[in-house]
Length: 127
Image (cartoon, rainbow, N blue to C red; front, side, top):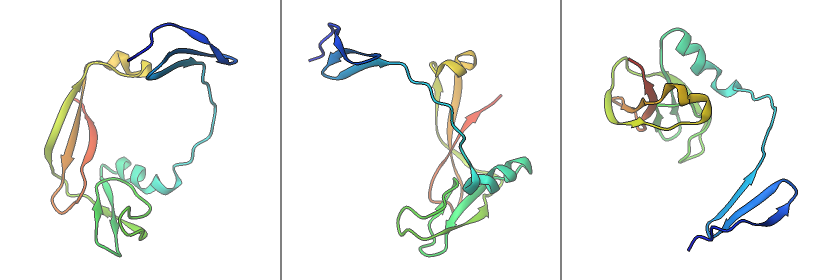
């Protein structure tokens, strides 16, 4: 059962509000550089209005998203072009978002399935 009373700080800058489930408030700020090296071909494909997926040459599993290695056999993947059309597998309307995206609420997310591809592609539906 949740405990709603505020507990003493257990660490400088961290406030504990509940124990079950553990609920804390802590300031978190990070500046970092992140490389998308392994996904660069995917983004270059987007510039050319093409979607690229990942294909495992070892077990033939086909991903609708970028992956450097197969999650089933560990084999290295190769790029392939996804079909130009797909089907909406599922969708949802989001009425809440992180602060950066609140101005866009509500927005729709879709899961798209492509023929010959084993996984789904998540995207935001515009328009």
